[in-house]
Length: 82
Image 1 (cartoon, one colour):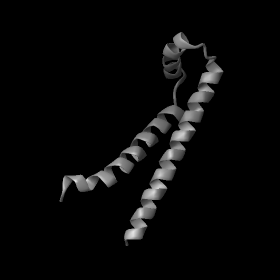
Image 2 (cartoon, rainbow, N blue to C red):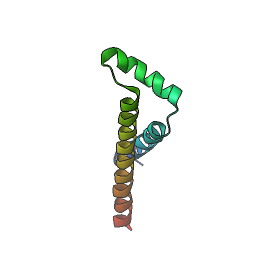
Image 3 (cartoon, rainbow, N blue to C red):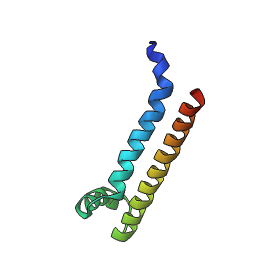
Image 4 (cartoon, rainbow, N blue to C red):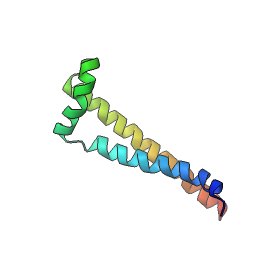
């Protein structure tokens, strides 16, 4: 098999895996980890703790939606083949 032939399969799979793990990490973050993420951002702009938590939850939901859409399209491509 040609190694270049795996690129169309590798890129959507990488998007699926990375978006899934990042969304799980953002949605189920512990308060201590959230504060560790907030401290570098706090040096650039001030973000309240509640606002930062909401932003992280929104990012997690968006990554989860990317995961679902990418897996849906990959599933449709597999159905078209057979």
